[in-house]
Image 1 (cartoon, helix red, strand yellow):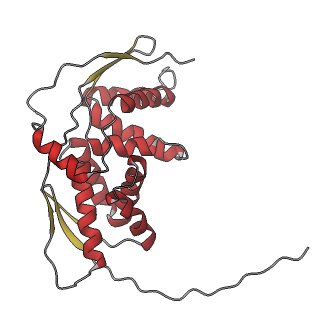
Image 2 (tube, rainbow, N blue to C red; image 1 turned 90 degrees about the vertical axis):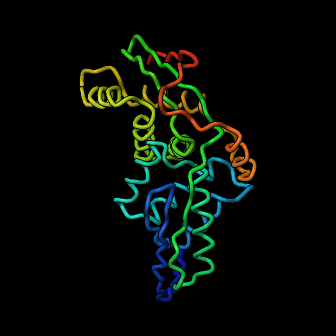
Image 3 (tube, rainbow, N blue to C red; image 1 turned 180 degrees about the vertical axis):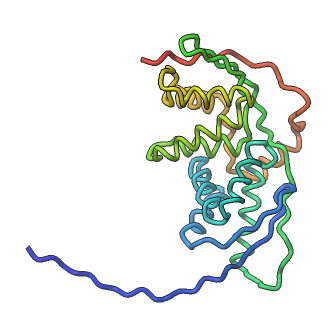
Length: 248
């Protein structure tokens, strides 16, 4: 059996940095032009025909491709705190793609994105499981967190991606005390609580808190303007009690 040998040469390419300064809902950051593959995927973020899953995966790819490590951490901290949301990131992406496509090195004006509260305002959910000693009041996170965590737990996601998604979701929805207790329990060898149990709870909450379809940005922003901003002075009462199924 003969083996065909394929040889080819790749041209040396130079890529301009093309940094873009952004004011994202009051947070300053720099977007660095990513590789072409990331740009191709990023077009899904603003495409009207993209599914929510494809859009969320494209956001994960974009954040990894355009932000340095420290800014990535800050980005997800803002998402956890709810000071940025899906609408803001979509608008930032659209403006950045346009700027890179029609690049003008003399244009140093930052992209400014203002915060528009989401029309999606689900209620808190109480999660209990007597067998595992769980009694959590879970507060809905931002629609950005819900979308990206759902994508990270999807079919084909690596163990690392799933662990990251679970961790960031718990940071966004649990109180500081409950989050600390969960982290401690996950390190104890004699504790019955396992990552599979938490994954089941997170999946159930994602299903309950699934935002409406986000494909039409004009309709979404119009709905947001008709919806009062989510109050931060106090938490709404939990809508219902959800019992996580005991581990088998």
